[in-house]
Image (cartoon, rainbow, N blue to C red; front, side, top):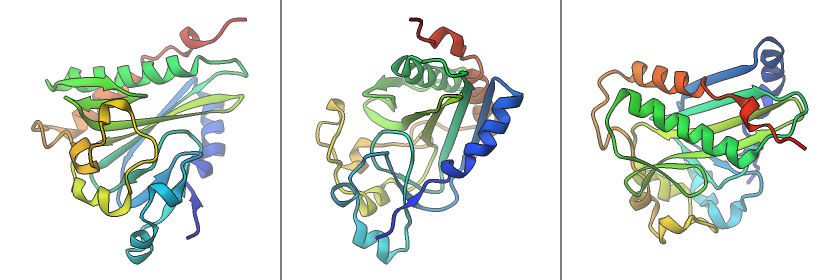
Length: 215
């Protein structure tokens, strides 16, 4: 099955343009179709149900950043946050941790929900994952990507993704539907636009200069 490039590739020139005008560029959109997205080196043969994807015409795409395979579907919010770094080295793990921390703060500024940061850039309600993260860096800018499950049918994840070849310790072998949850399954979202705005504002407080590595 042919694996296409995730649309972030097409955004490179656009992000470069935005980085010429701004120090930071944040964007977010709700997923409107079902697709599988692989990490930069995720093996598709062991992590993806290719036969089912072909049967249902679900595209398999590959992103530039790391991380495992994810299923995007209506109800998932896809966020990206890019910072100008001007050929400077950035503490990648520090950047990842700070980005997830800011999303957590943005959600908590709007609603009361028991959030925990776990694994490598995962945000969870209790021990169930609602957000996964990835980062990608060029000499000019660094971008944080994440997928946040607002709502949706989580049972479909197991239809298109196999059990991952690598998993965080806290997953403990759980099936996709037992490992993930959505915000809406745990708390009522009174105003989704206000939640989105709160997250964006919180991400906007990241100071990339605090994460620059000094020789």
